[in-house]
Length: 90
Image 1: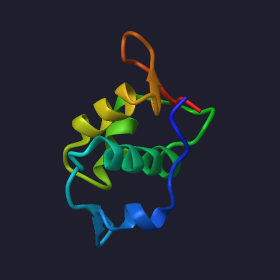
Image 2: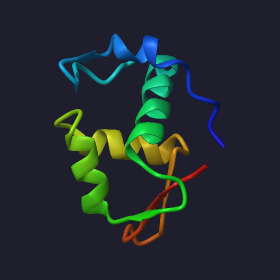
Image 3: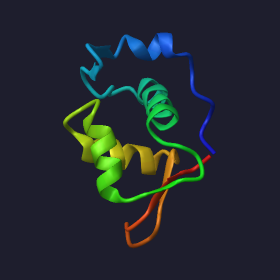
Image 4: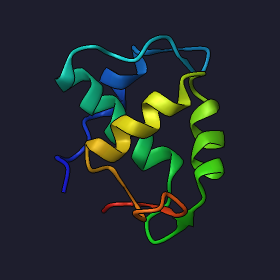
């Protein structure tokens, strides 16, 4: 399970007018962002299609595929091996 998310104050600096200005390059900073996105965009216990994941991520940044990949690789989202279903990991 990923580490607990940090406060929204630190993450809010990454946003301008509700949009993510850039995906952080530093791993620790990116993990803070991923925790925030997982907690705010995805409900625990609910299954999501890849399109639903993409649509949710598009609300904050145009590079939804990178964010989706980081969320899965970081353990924030889990997906079925065929990619048909995603869910929040914790």
